Image 1 (cartoon, rainbow, N blue to C red):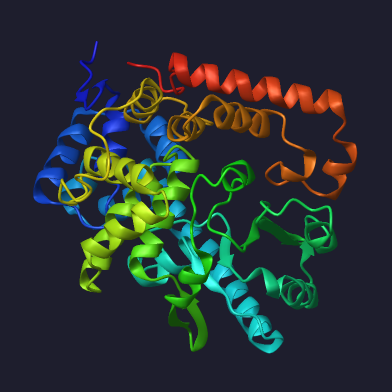
Image 2 (cartoon, rainbow, N blue to C red):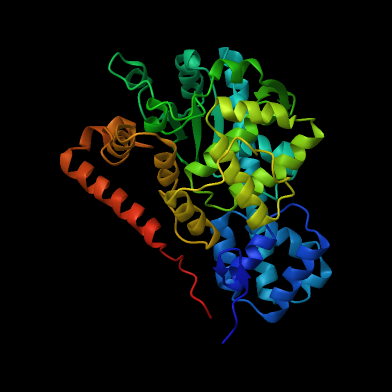
Length: 411
């Protein structure tokens, strides 16, 4: 029986260790040697490819093996063929997505809508700088809420359909904490446009003031940016880093690609002169010290990020709550952690009433506040489906507390 290597929170499968080693654009000599040792000893390639795809780092696995003859020599030919196929698929998908982005930016420019590019839409061309190194599931754009109607008209002109009528979002009875709309174009499957007008995506967190981000400041300090000659905007480096931490926490840093983004963005931001002092001040003002602390700590431990320790000293307590410890264990041990972010949200809220309010708004949210709910969903969301959804959410939380393992059996 193969002896499992020790990870930062106990034994992990060699396939899991391998995908963590490849989760950087450039590998150090030590990480490259460790990766070669694991691959040469033999891994379950089907599991490694599946997990790498789930973790969002299959393009990086393909890249590192393709560019290193020593690594390539220990990989079966059939696997090399699969990796090359996946690389070409990544390129093809990104070409489609960024062609759509060009259309959208042109339509926004004509319609008088300013947009800030978020996550992959900015990271791929600016930080990763290649179409074969990072996947993008959707295109994420930030607009001003005042531009929502103009944005909707511009996208409809391109044939996009909203998941929810903007009149419902802007109506007098609308929930002001809902800050996201989704668009798709009939006949074009596999991606959506995720349009938001606030960086806090979860209505419950925004309504409770958990992360008091000043959106006027965000826009005032955003920067002009160009893609293929088209004018757009990007967040200031420290604001984008804070957003990556907040968004990654929402998904419990699953896929691990979210930690790769933090590590690579940190290095990129240093070349842009991002000040640590300003980052500290902003993290404290926006209530993002804990998300940033978790993003830094986990990216150091899992993907080898060279982010100096002590950046947040004095801002974050060295004592961790049981909820935070459970969350960290789930991430470090590659356990299924969907919904785990709510453990951190609960820990950040002070007092029993806010905590109960978060639980209520999370598990018993009104239909329009449910992530991704569309017109049909809202109309059909009666009491029975809402209760069943709540029970599923509670079950997910209990799974996190128990530490449900991912489906990667030990050899």
